[in-house]
Length: 98
Image 1 (cartoon, one colour):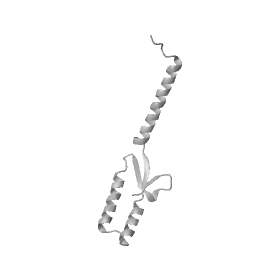
Image 2: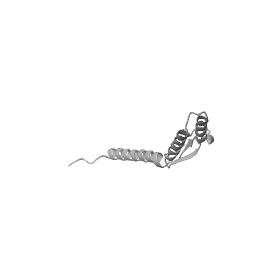
Image 3: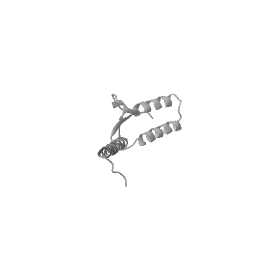
Image 4: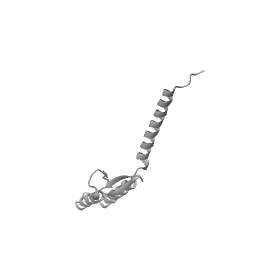
């Protein structure tokens, strides 16, 4: 018959399971549920596209494609991200540039 685990082994097992569960819970919460702030520099992007268009570096079709790309980037931002304009960011926020 197998010898039952001692008190020390049982405490070590409980600590290991508790630690792993806590780490996994925090990782999942941070990854999928916690609200995070990201900034999108829409104004700067539109100004750059405008300058390129007026300088003749872009055609009408290229301009439409660039705005479609901007829309795709903004649409692809996960739902747990709060999106603000890039002009409003002072510091410590992830800035997405399309």
